[in-house]
Length: 150
Image: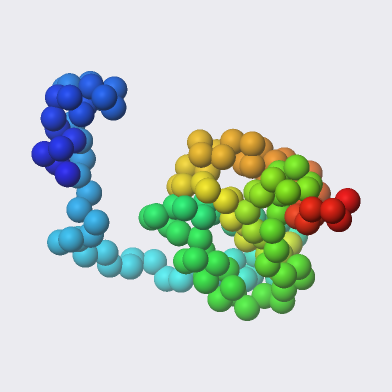
């Protein structure tokens, strides 16, 4: 990868200045990550059950680094009662898929954004605006309506 990305033609095609330095992260080869903090699960569970703070965890469903399956696993590991089961939400209130959402007790929600990578607003600005606007207004995320149901 380093050889390819450092070719003058590739840099020009990607609009990367010829003098720019690439940092090559090696996908953890030779990298040892040691947890230095304890689990945050008890903190989030406390917030959900013992405060009036609303929590929205969101994740692009094509994020390769912090994928939505991992996020779904840790949010469900809180063992909060499900208020609204895993369901699709839409940008248009009909069929333009935004992603999926599950809502738990304590005003704690986990939402995915379909087709978004790590920088969700960069990849899906309309969906980002929709879910964030609704969450800030404390409005429900618009459900999917199958064709012919309206």
